[in-house]
Image (cartoon, rainbow, N blue to C red; front, side, top):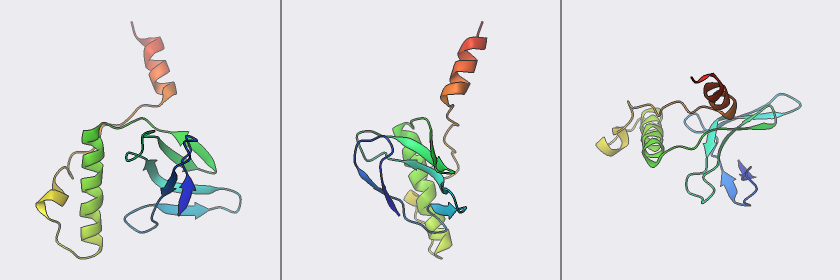
Length: 114
């Protein structure tokens, strides 16, 4: 599946549909793409989810988070397709990237901070 980056930069973003990559659903009115789409290879580094036809912006990831996510993806592919993952593919698999907070959560935290 391909689409133009939701930030408006004009880059074509390719999201391969497979059990280990993205899933695309259509409910008759709108699409949902899962999991989030992180455009880490582009200058915009936009990160979003397409849910029920709407873009939900997600927080930026550090380079370490991106590397850990890519390692998890490689390991999942190795398991799915019956290959033994290499140590490089497994490195970082157990370390989940920290949850990013949306703008409303950050605003709430800022407003309630004393």
